[in-house]
Each structure stands twice: as C-alpha cells, then as structure tokens.
Image 1 (cartoon, rainbow, N blue to C red):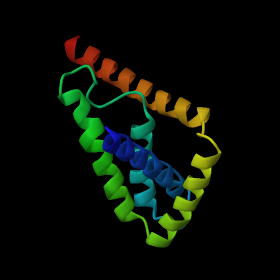
Image 2: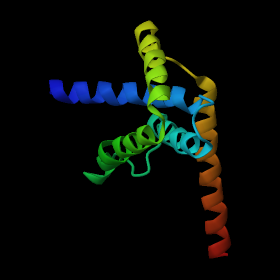
Image 3: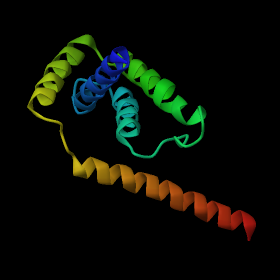
Image 4: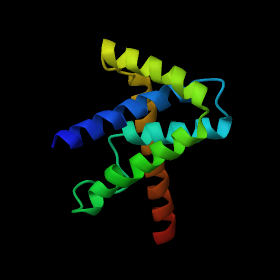
Length: 126
C-alpha cells in the first residue's frame, strides 16, 4: 500500500510540473496543447470512462493519465522540466494550489461537449 501512495504522489507531482511547463514560453505550441489536455483531464472530475463501471472505470486513471503524463514529459525539453520541477516542489511545500478559474474552464468545456452531444442526438432522432 505504501508503494501505491508513493506512486500517486509522484503522479501528482508530475502533473504540477506539467502545469508549469504548459505556461512556459520555451515549450512548443503542440507540446503545450497536449500537456494542457493531460493536465485538464487529470484535474477534471469527469472521466472518459466513469469510475462506477467495474474494472474499465479505473483503467483511465491507471493507464491513460500516466501514459499521457509520460508522453507530455517526453515532449518538453529537459532544462524546462528542471525549472518547472523546482517550481512544483515549492508549490507543493507551500500548499496545494486552488485555481477556480481553471476548474470553471474545465467544467465549461465538458458542459459544451455534453450540449453538443445532445444537439447531435436530437438531430439524429428527429
């Protein structure tokens, strides 16, 4: 169980690193875009596969998020990662960040996707 907590702590730290990398001007636009999607998905309360579905519900948390983090970390230059790692460590030491603006934006995006799906479904069935 201790290994699992350590693994989760490491993932959380890496997400904070990606959060800072996403805002760094030295990162290419495509790496920023992918990194922003990974960070948004990791912080989002809404999953691609709902957690209540047995086994499959946990797959996105166990496979998709770590795979996205790994790929995003590979896209960012090492010197940028080192700087972002220092900033993330400082932030973790101080306290956990609360970014209500980012949370609201994530909820807005999911709401727009939901509305788009409903509009498409209504058009198909009418």
